[in-house]
Length: 195
Image 1 (spheres, rainbow, N blue to C red):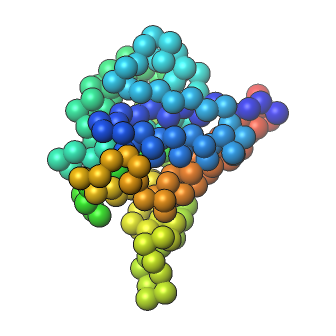
Image 2: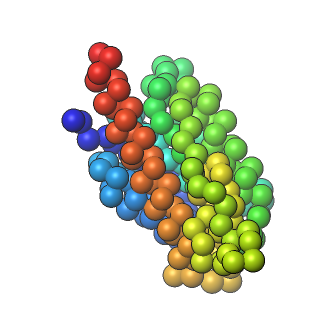
Image 3: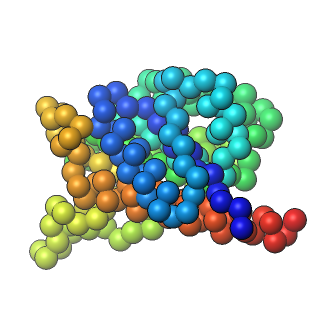
């Protein structure tokens, strides 16, 4: 069976989102995928080619002012070259984000990623978890403690560094990476079966 290729295309302004990207990568690796991290603010032609040959692309960015970072928006606009050629049609997509506030309008960033994926004809993979920390017996240490369904969300205090990224958010990101890798394995096998 072919090993699926999962690439994480992300921007991190201060290092917090890079911690989440690495957690997604760890989960995808555990899920049996060949995994690559691609910083979109430093992308090269080789990085574009890697995304083109990936079975799944996981988008990631901090949420700034209610949406993905400016650097991620520049990358998203540059994907129009792939859109014209349908280079990413049929691939899997997923997303993650981090902000300083519990909500911070992270949902808008994830929806931005989902719309970008839909424009490319990609298939979105959600988190697949029930919300944590939503009952009297729950705690901030629950996986999916922020209760997001669309992708992995993280909250890190704005006056703390990347080492302060919450362990539950790291676990949630690892779960997303693993889920993407497992789904990609099924897609790769399915394509081979119908070929």
